[in-house]
Length: 213
Image (cartoon, rainbow, N blue to C red; front, side, top):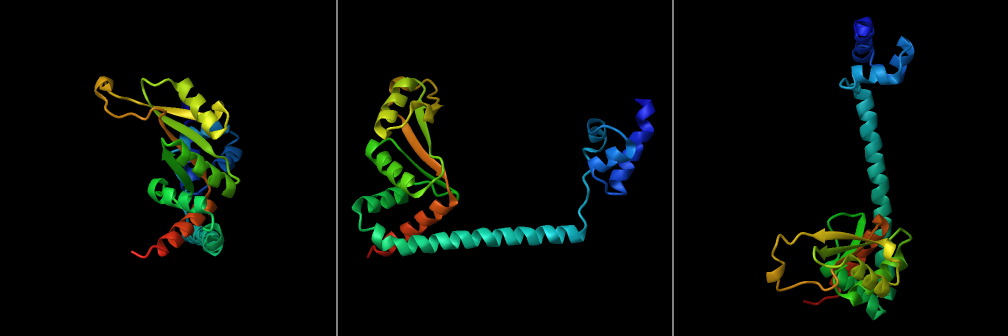
């Protein structure tokens, strides 16, 4: 609207020349945030060199902090390894993780499989070493019955069916010719725990150091 043209011009000027934030411009012009936002939303406030240096310093400090946490977790894992590996089933879990575990990021612990015993073993040790929430997800063929799969895995893992989510895999009309299928789908057990993921890395390294090959 024409009657706001001078205010719009002033808002843009305050943003570009005075480097003022949205709230400050609203107070100066006695206008609502909604109105001013649409005038200046495409005009970021450039950071000064001092602000950029402060931001970089803060980022480096944060990175250093979390690296110390990961290093501590790794060292704790290595220290505990000799006692933990006395349990054959724990060793089996680490072998499973070496073969089937998710290792692309350092904050996710996950095992995906269709074998009930492998998943029960993974659930046991993931639950033992994390206080974070554990998630369950089934990847299933489009022609499989969701309710039956949820019932099966809830019984196997002794969890509520409502805890399990599903992802349907499209078979693009090739169901009749399929020669392989996971009868109960492929279930993923997952948690987001950087501390545990780092310890598992320490345990995997420890185990591989024992292999004389």
